[in-house]
Amino acid sequence: MKRFAITGYGPANEVFQEITVPSREVTSNHLRVNLKAFSINPYDVALRLGKMQEMRQLKFPYVLGNDGAGVVTEVASDVTHFHVGDQVVVHPISGAYGEEIVLQNF
Image (cartoon, rainbow, N blue to C red; front, side):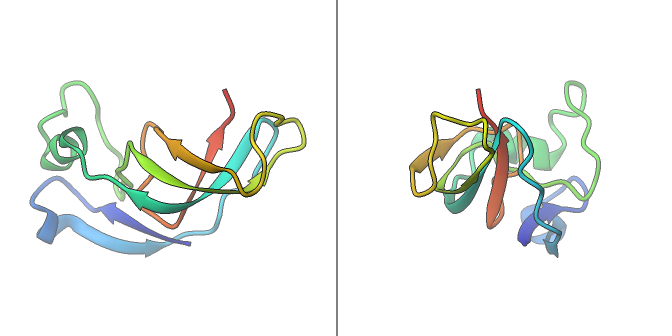
């Protein structure tokens, strides 16, 4: 699976890198979303520039992304509120800059 990660703090053209990582397993109480869109919001920009270091330290490479939208492609057997094919908006702590994301069902 492809994702866009930052390799350190700084300007986008200097720190972004496309990475390929294995897809996460969908375990109990989780679902997989194939992302169709993600936003680049001010919080992500502040994190990338290092302006949030006092509150949140990042481990690099780090995949930003607090907002996204997509289609559910897999659900754990104990997830009952979401189904394959559902169109969803997601708000993860991070990780939306990529092809897919595995999220906990709340």
